[in-house]
Amino acid sequence: MKAAGRSRPAAWRYAVVIAVVLLAVAAGAWLLQRQAVASDDATLDAEVVHIASTVGGRVVRIAVKENSAVRAGDELFQIDPEPLQLAVEQTEADLALARAMLATQRRGVGTEQSAAAQASEQTRRAQTNLALAQRTVARLRPLAAKGYVPQQQLDQAETAERDAQITLRQAREQERAAGRAVGTDDGSQATVRAREAAVALARHALAGATVRAPHDGRVTGLSITTGEIVVPSQSLFTLVVSGEWSAVANLRESDLSRIAVGDCATVYSMIDRRQALRGTVTGIGAGVLDADRITLPRNLPYVQKSMNWVRVAQRFPVRVALQEPPQSLMRLGASAVVQIRHGDACR
Image (cartoon, rainbow, N blue to C red; front, side, top):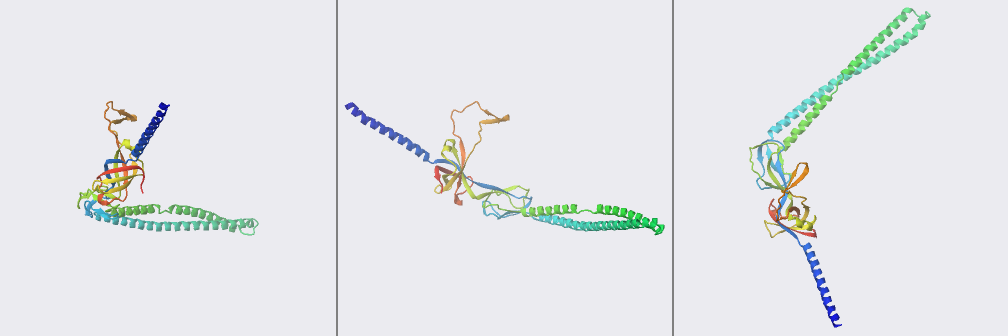
């Protein structure tokens, strides 16, 4: 009885120890899950625009300097507009000539249409005369047979009928010829449309001689001066867009399961580590280049037979969009530290 009494407190203490251990394990797992995922292998990133002109020519003015800030719509540089202005004037002259030719052709077509209308009217008149002659012959023939009218009068009526038939045939032939002679102004209209398009292109090229900033940003990589001749689409410098900034952190593959898109992040720029920047995870890298795997024809992967016994965790880029960061800390490619806490809703 005494041994049984002593065993009950021991069993109770054993159960308490197990419960405490389980609670400690659960708390540790919860703390591990809540612990921020951090990486000091991060850089600041922004969109960039390679600034170029759509036309070629000599650079006559550069309105910006290296690292200068610009606003959207500000002039960046200008190509010599004189050759482009001359091209506009030439195409406008070609358009005026094409329109004049169209007007002349339309007048000619109007004359031809009038001649065709007259020929058609002559045909109708000939048809009327023939019908009248035929009725006259039909009326005189029975009268001449009975002697009421002289035979000569009937002969004259029949002659008039034959003449009316010949006249009708000639009128119809003239009507067909006049109808075939009527032209159209389709070709001249097409020429005018082509000249109008040429004028629009020339004006667009002239407008492209002045290059303006497409976004707010900073100029970098400016290494030309006035007088240099450039070709169309030749990038002269880069504009770092300042409207949206982000941080790209390279995280170990073992940490990816602990973060998700939408998690709140804290970013520290190495320009000033004292200022914390707020951000939100917007993307997790879907893949990186594997240098040890070579793809052969027919998409068959070749894996090297050698094996490195020390396995290094692969890193994947995670993008964090920054929320209204101070521009004084924003430099493309600057080093940063990123801390991500899973489950935190960014306000």
